Image (cartoon, rainbow, N blue to C red):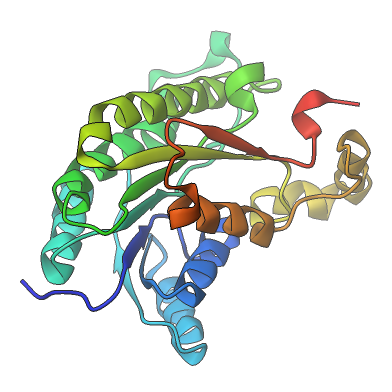
Length: 254
């Protein structure tokens, strides 16, 4: 077991969008960043980009919905570095849309696995290594859908994100005695490939979303990355069990 010289951050789902912006920001903050994804080609490309910026980075390809894969890989990362200082459970997604009447059990379980099981699997495995970390914390991702229950066909997505909100607070209670903080971010509409389909097929609809945001613009991945950076830092040393909305006031509606 080697000892990492600096802080080590593990970011799931980090080969693009918000996850990669978070990896860049944390890398520039001085972390060794360990990216996860399922597209190994994209992962290799992202590592090259980070290294070109002078960031120490590596990639582990595994599916966050697969308990065995998550456990073995997070364990391998922890053993390699001797600790984990920060776990960012960034992986997640809508997973498609389905109304409850037509919803298959397979679809239900796939969305819950992507958004909620993944947080449980990664956090559970990382905890022994977080205990060895410096100012250790876990940062999860919920969504306004966790409060509104999502739009048409996104009810199970909303349900899964409500679960993330709850598990964040539960983990914070469970881990406070070890000095491990657990918080969540709740991104609003962020201009990422997550919205690529509607941006390409209905650009006028995509552009109109800004009208429902108090600050009058869509979010950028860097808007989320800066808050993740803050929550992981010593400046947030007395913050745990919280969820920060990053939506330009979108959650309030206008």
